[in-house]
Length: 258
Image (cartoon, rainbow, N blue to C red):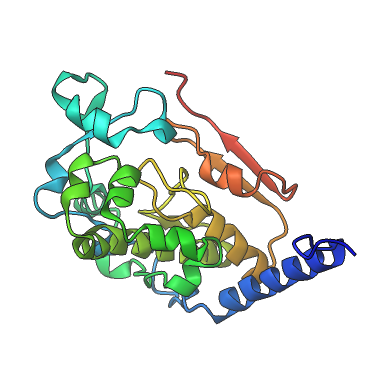
């Protein structure tokens, strides 16, 4: 008789089917796919995107020497004064983009689309409960945002001032995908958290909004193939990990070699 710890191929397939069924039911029950009036332009933004508290928007973001996934929060923070590999960090850039567009006459704020915040059920479409629970640790959030002082703040503050804006941006990415299918184009001013995968965040990316967008599109928009064109200076590794064995996904990353 085989050991009880080993599962048969049939049991494994059944488990996979159950997981997919649960994922699909969560997607179908989600409220993130808003019905947007035709009078609105397909540009998604909320003032809740911006992260500004205790002067965090004035901090300098420290870049890890060996890449985003090798960030050493303790070592890099202690060596901050002697480290040359840093750059100014703008955690309110999303609002600045909108203000620029308004100033130049390209945008009227009341014509933009305001998204809903992604709920825990929405996030569980991709993320595990274990990963979401890990975000209740301030040290984990500090590591993901690569802002060492964040580790010293109560997590309740980080949930409201950091993770809530991230979840709003996730909602924005998901509804923007719906609008793109309906209107032919759409822009989410925030989101694009390409360093976050289902089980790991990093590079100021706490939630895998790109992977979530893809799963939502497969179920709700009848999309069968997806191509991600990534023009960021760093290669997007999160969604590539999530869909590494999936032939319906094609990533194209044009990043800096420096």
